[in-house]
Length: 293
Image (cartoon, rainbow, N blue to C red; front, side, top):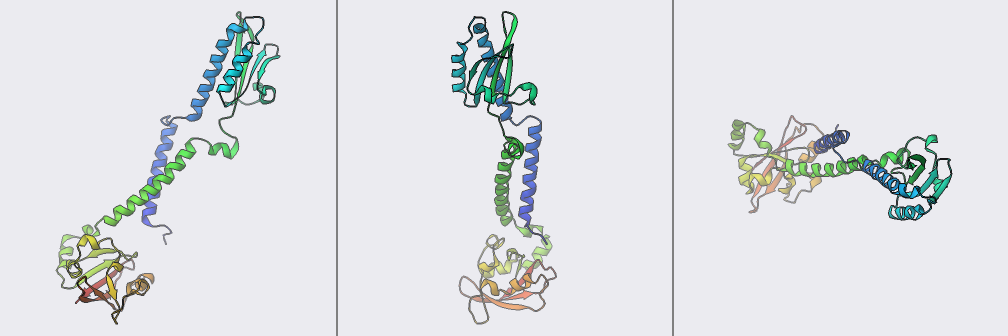
């Protein structure tokens, strides 16, 4: 027994293809990597700051760099602290809580939150410039969910699924199932003096011959894909049938062929009544209705 209908399965298949294409594009580098762009920007900032600091480091007092560091930190919200450390390990300048934020790079794995640039003055090693940034993503499962590709896949999956489902619903509703019927069979059905309507499990009209089309005064396009309940069915006493009392509803619900021929009445737009019979069917997914005056 299918839990989901055919449209849903097709939509899920199409969405899976779209997700696979996005993953392949990401692995090939065709999808922009936001974290990579942030890392490149941080490295460029650190190198520019180190290059601009070289001239000041040649002087006796490097403390004028503190104003430059404060200005740079104020312009970069994700920059937690900046430190200038001499070659002997002494922290000469600290902007922000650098002592609390900075972790020696030798004692931790390489990450994108800390950048260290070696500095030279007068052709000799002077020390290092240390920049501590806000991590681009958290650790653990939360960090995985913050990967830019995950929200992109989730967004495309949801939006494409809804779009495909709505599109398939509209397209399949307007498809003409009679095209799958050979021309000779269709001609034979149209030559019947009695009207014939075939409905599926959803009580949707999948076939209507020419006689029932003329009897109802509707076009074939109006009947195909529409609910059979759109026809004004009446019971034996002439009262309108409720959806739960349709004979074909019970036959389809039992998922087996209907043996006795159940009867109901219908009414045309002009008010002329006709009689409808539920014919035996060997396909439990369909029901056949024969209509005549």
